[in-house]
Image: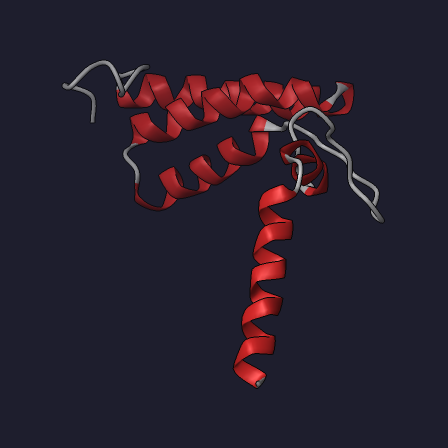
Length: 117
């Protein structure tokens, strides 16, 4: 008797799942592309490439060549102004360091020249 009850319940759930409208199912998905929202939290999105370039510079300073350090500093210098006017002084400092390191290494673009060290 229990097997019959379990089988009928499973069949009922399977039928309900098949009969459900696909549009209703899409509305239950949190990250539906047509309706982006977050329930119960404040959402903020910020695209800040400087964060990635800071990590790249740290890695280049640990294990990279002088030209790779110059390259990373140059990328960081170009990304910092996107953070706002209060980061312009640091951007200028990073750009000057990139120029100095580039001149010292003799190579400005290590990614495009295999003779760069």
